[in-house]
Structures are given as C-alpha cells and as structure tokens.
Amino acid sequence: MNREQMSAIAHAEHPIKSPLDDHSVRRLLDRGLAHGSERALDLGCGSGEWLLRALAAHPHLHAEGVDISEYALAQARSTATDLGVEKRLVLHHMKAEDFTSAEPFDVVLSFGAAHAFGGLLPTLAAARKHLAPGGCVLIGDGFWQHAPSREAIEMLGDFTDLATTVDRVVADGWTPIDGHVSTRRELDDYEWACWGSLAAWALDHPDHPDGTEALTMATTRRNEWLHAYRDTWGFVSLVLRQTPNRA
Image 1 (tube, one colour):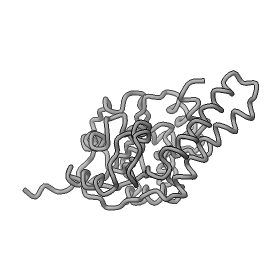
Image 2 (cartoon, one colour):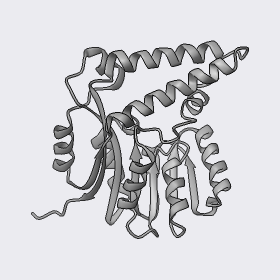
Image 3 (cartoon, one colour):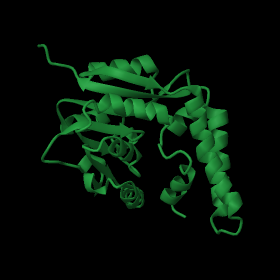
Image 4 (tube, helix red, strand yellow):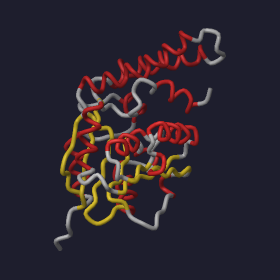
C-alpha cells in the first residue's frame, strides 16, 4: 500500500485534511465566496474536498484544483461526478508551484499544503500570482500555541506563535478579514479520526499484507500526537485580502 492509499484510509471519516469541523469549513467558505459565482483555485487540493463543498453549495461557482497526487485527483473526479458538479471543476495533475493560468481567480485556497512551497509566506506569494484584483485567499497552517519540544519541531516543522504568524502575514502585504483558530475539540477530533480510521481498517483486514504496517503507523502517529505535540501545536485559518499600497 502506498502513502496515498494509506492517507485515504486515514481520512475516510475526516475528509477535510485539516483540523476543522464542518461548521468551520462552511463558515470560511461562505466568508471567502461572497457572491457564489467566483472562480476558485485550490493549490494542493488533494481529493478536492474544499472545492467540492464550495461547488455543491454554489451552483454558479467554477473551480480548479492542482495536486501532484493522481490518486487523490481520481477521488476528486469521482466525487464530483457523484455530486453532479464535474462540469464546473477542472483538475490539474502537476506541482502547485508550476501551475499557470491565463485568467486570474477570485479566490485562492491552500490548506495544510505550505510545506510544498517552503512555508506560509512562499505559499501566499504563489497565491498572489493567481489572484484577481479584490480577490481573497483562504489559507490554513500550523503555529505553536506553547513552546514546543525539539522533538515536536522535528516532526512538524519550525512554526512560530500565532501573533508572530499573523504579524508576518500582515507585513507581507495582506489584511486578514476573518480567521479561525482550531479548537481543542477540532484538533483532537482530527487526530482521533485519522489514526482511529487507519487502526480500524487494519483490525478489520487482519489477513491483508499491509495490515500490520497500517496498524503500526496508526499507533506510532497516535503516540507522537499524544506525547510530542498535542499540548503545543495549533492550526489557524485566515481569510486574506491584499493590503492597498498607500505609498
């Protein structure tokens, strides 16, 4: 079983691959899609869950997603067909940083994909290239709620605290018009869902050649969360517009 298949099993009960519940996702989308007829782009869309929910809620919306995983994109295409929104969704199998478009987008999304660009600010720089005047960016990334251990930094990356994260975004030329800090319940629900789903699959398939590997991974990831970063790591989602240049 490859990494993509393992991820699909882990996220079966939590298809949004970030610690956000359905209400938070809906509220962020509603904030970013003020008219419902926008052109939306997701950089690092995975299985397209953000775009699929937006398309289902807004019948005049058109969307494009970019991801390197053909497996995830195949899932997105299948779900789009099931929802009847496939004609309004275009998917690109390529690196998000290599994507170009002749037309800009009213909304650019990127959640939990900053590692692909080298960090939060490089991700925003990529989003800016695709953003239409007056458009907005919906982005989510991690931060440290409390001073992390060296082990936590090695696992998750060298984030900053929430205030510094927002300060850096503002200094980079963006104005937050909304945001959401994932609650303890959202953070915990996400971790329990991921590693519980993977463990349950392994227990339900005792004769599968990858069952032992899946159970070991679920156990390892759960222990890393509980012992290394549960009390220090957080997740912030921001709705941003470009700050006017007043110079």
